[in-house]
Image (cartoon, rainbow, N blue to C red; front, side, top):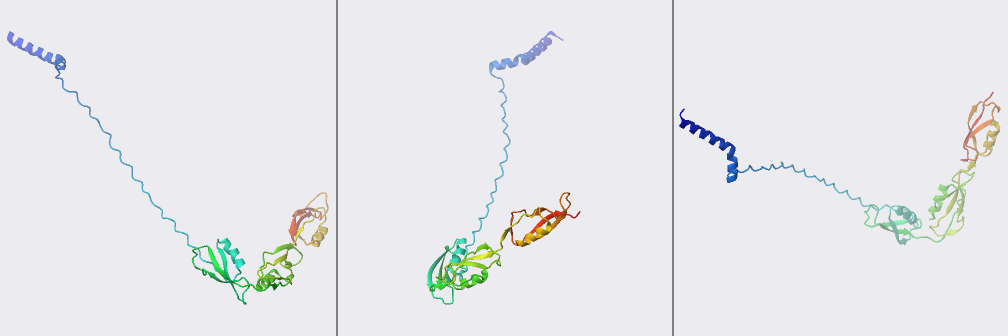
Length: 265
């Protein structure tokens, strides 16, 4: 190889090496470096929107039906007011009218009529006119039902009777106020006292013998009930060990008393 060719090859190799090793510095000094790659911002994937809430509207409750007017005709205005008060209704007496075949104070007409829808809580009534003072009959000795029918037929009112212990048949009228024969306007309350089943105090039966205990119970209006027998080392046959109910308990007339007594040896 001739010297000229060698020189050319060496120059070419040197130029390549300079370009490789010194090229970036030279380009940096001359401002000819390629621009740095731009960063690419990666946007996050859009999140799905929440599903819209579905609001279900509940239907409004149906209004309560309006009350209708009860039928108060045929009963006294006093009793009607007692019934109406529990329903929040006011009874207003508008007029009294002669009605010989009706009880004094009995409702003859009402406005609004029975079954009509009430727009207010008032019912206006026409009642049978009161008669002159009436003689109160004597009802003592009669049953409560008999006394009530007789008094109400004349226009008197009979409130809840007072019960009183008595040996008379339960429900028998023992007393009345006002007394029979007195005069009072119709609508007057006649208070009755009636017989009720007497309450008796259970006597002490323990410590007695069965025959004596049975007689003592019957003498005061009680009965001998179930008799249970059990063995006992100290007491003889028929000795009362226990009783039910206990002594001192209040029980109705005719109640059976259970006894536990000593069994035969």
